[in-house]
Image 1 (cartoon, rainbow, N blue to C red):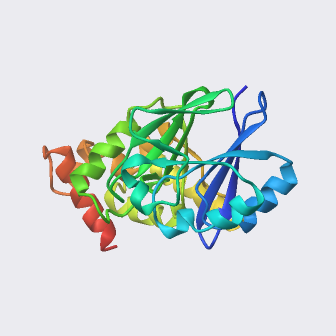
Image 2 (cartoon, rainbow, N blue to C red):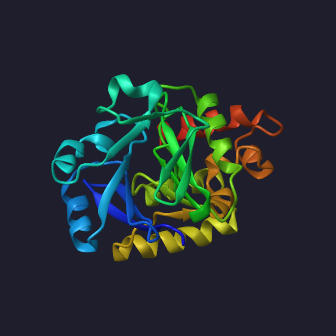
Length: 255
């Protein structure tokens, strides 16, 4: 049976995710922006927290950990290379490692760019990819510590996963990302259709996360740097895809 996954709004625009393995009863949490909404979700479901996966060190992904652990002790998992600035870890992992949550196996992917040593977790049996601030719905995270070519390489790793993978990203930024995407890919009918759906969801308070990877490949300009229409629109026909990505990211930074 696949993981049962709940999207939990936190802070003003963050998401955390609870994933429950019905076969074993194990429950993992991905990121901890604040404890309150997560504690409420655990109380509501009756799930027992077993593992906490941390994607990167930014405060809005770790600040709720002490308050959560005080009520629900659990194994804390994060990047070995980032352990010096993460909360204390029980399991340190690197790209290529796996994590076992109940009967499910997750694969660790280094997606450096937004931060150095940012990691994502892919659970293929559940078609679930937890990307936090690397690949986002219709966007990608701002490049704070890495380089834009490094971020492009990281996103290409994720783009190569099966198209039926659900992307669980860390923020409700989709409407703003959609407005920018139109400036890069204005004649894309799939994008125009998706924006209508995003607008409806935001108006009703429905999360736009998760999203299907296949949909991101069709509509997310940060995954489409090799698309001839986008390159032509940017005046970069035939350019290296990493250079096109860098131009798109720079434009987003100034949008």
